[in-house]
Length: 226
Ligand code: AP5
Ligand code: MG
Image (cartoon, rainbow, N blue to C red; front, top):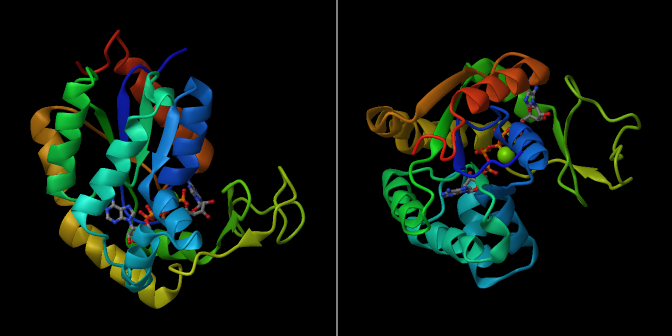
């Protein structure tokens, strides 16, 4: 089963974009492209981009469009992108969305399928406060909803689980504000393009997974929304 298209997971911090993007990408053999993960890796490796992005991410603000877009373009130039991709956390601003449209068109992918993850803010805050991530594989856990079998240890590879430094109450507040101001308007942009789908992401992981599966089947065709 091939994806053969670009999926965009849109939604606030803690909506479950990463959790579901990992599943869909694995199921379809597609690339999971998380700009948050790419930036965190750059920060860990102390690259030029990492040094620039670190204080911005620590404040819960967005990294500059040109840097993020260049990073995505570079990644998409690699050969493992032919089967389609799941964008998680990108685009996040109108200029990023316009640029992505151009990139996809140039690469013959046509219009993306955009899925807006809807969840109320109180649920997001609880989810983020309970999130732990594997420092090796990036597998995502939650002490309330999906606890690891052994506290602090990844079920899959035994890696140490860590909390993200931007999951503190104060930074979460800023991330939610940045989402409302800069990213939420993208839903309207994609609605006008006729490619927006909405899921109730406050449901359980399994229910959200099933809802996504239904959307993907419904929008299937040789080219998805093309
Ligand atoms: P990024 O890493 O993208 O963070 P985010 O958008 O804030 O989203 P999260 O990763 O926090 O949430 P998620 O939706 O992936 O939820 P998850 O699946 O983990 O970005 C981080 C920073 O990088 C930004 O603030 C910005 O500075 C920078 N950045 C990144 N992209 C950028 C861009 N394009 N432009 C500019 N700057 C950029 O789930 C959360 C928790 O809930 C987990 O514990 C999970 O187990 C649990 N959970 C998931 N689904 C469910 C469910 N259905 N029910 C119960 N629990 C659930
Ligand atoms: Mg994420």
